[in-house]
Image (cartoon, rainbow, N blue to C red; front, side, top):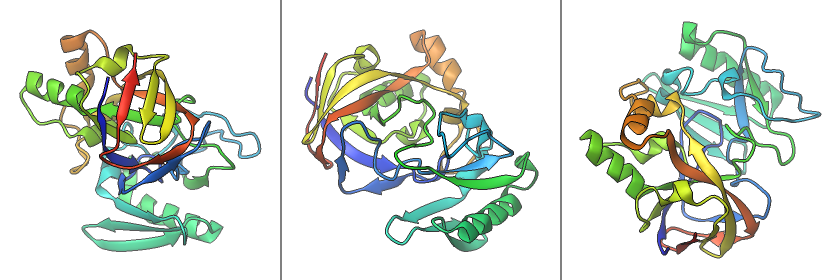
Amino acid sequence: MSGRVESLWRYPVKGFTPERLDAVELVPGRGFPFDRVFAVEDGPSGFDPASPAHVSKMRFTVLAKIPKVARARTRFDDVAGELAIETDEGVFTANLRDEAGRASFARWLKDFLGEEASGELKVLPAPGAHRFYDDPRGHVSIINLASVRDLAERIRRPVDPLRFRANVHIEGWPPWIECDAAGAHLRLGAAQARVIAPIRRCVATHVDPDRGVRDLDMLEALRSLYGHVFCGAYVEIIEGGPVRPQEGAELRV
């Protein structure tokens, strides 16, 4: 099944703004570069950096819990380690590779979120190869844009693909083929991957990624129209290589 990579996205701070990329180098057994490398605890999460393991996203400041997070527009400089956050009130910067910088960001975010943050905020850096994914299998996530368009047509309203917070947006596939592709081989540019499983969606998809408000019951729409709550798929990189927009995305089901 031939398609193409339409765009590439990373989410350096879990729950915050996507960043569009011109190219990426994928590595076998590793996650998408600089994706979910930081997360902000909303109260103690139980995460142990000495023995990193998957922690529920609801322990962090994510859209599923606090839609207002989407109103803080972030940009991460992975060379300098600096995060820039823009809101209607101005721009705030902090170096997330520095403990003092992470504490400064946590204080700023607490003021910004107010009572919507239920606990003490603390910025966690991911140790080693660990990433703060929603699912421990979520090395790289893909979204089929034809599936999103089919959904939008059926509910008769626009659906921004960024609601699904995937790393790779793909054009040229039939709608929903990714939901039946577990175990299939996938070529992305020069990289080779294996489809792990479809992505079970949550209430984060109810949030408009621009306005930071819940305005669409995505789970009910998926369930009523298709009989499931899946959209997109997790894949594991088995052979590394560069990937760029407009390069091939070939699925062998």
